[in-house]
Length: 321
Image (tube, rainbow, N blue to C red; front, side, top):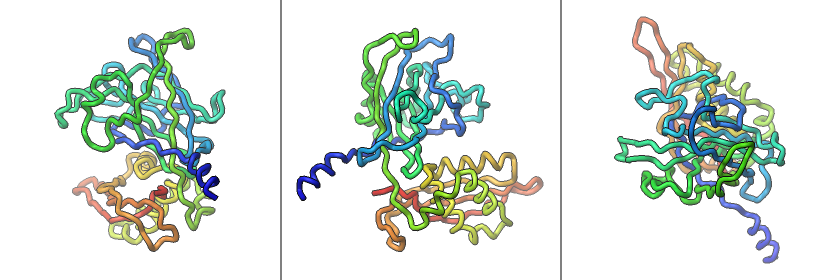
């Protein structure tokens, strides 16, 4: 018995530490793995690896998103004041996504990019953030992973913001010396991600029958109601967020999808005051991690001040503890 337990424990892998997302993520980044525009000077890097579950198994069909600043420390969707802006896909220069199963090596991902530059954060009194690459990994049945990867030789690593979600030595990639890669000189690094598997839920079969597109449409209909009726739809909207989470799309991502499809309509959905709120013993499983969020719908009126309707939602992101 003890031998079996030891073997089982030996397969356990610690999940990749999470990091702050930052404001510059964009939906629908192009399916591209090369982010090194011609004519831009910089150090070329090639990053590759695999996606594992905490039990040591391969995560099937994950999608890996990457976005980063240019060699001068500026994001492709950043305006002169540092604010994020919408840009057309043709300008998505320093971002991309790949399906890990679409590459030559089974379930491996690979990106090439120019090393991002450092940039200051005056509000934090920070001279410069360490160079970093933003990563989002999503896969059906797994908790969405948002993290950042760092470079081993950056002098600002130890000077980063001293709060959870910023520089973590576990996320340092050790790049090899320059090698020839696709007729160019590049530094090559490997980093394997480890994701948390989601706990089964009572209505698992129904969740699997739903697609993200259907959930977006369903939530739009529930939110696009007359002012004053939103609280009546709270539980159904929360259920849509739960189902989206099980399909690998987190709260922020799902909200962005809804708002993008709403376009220039009168409605906008926001999530505020997100935080861990503990376990809900009323559900069948006591091992889900819960978030509390303030769900705000803004109705725009042409001749009057906007009417804001809000309701407090409590729902599970189905993350296994």
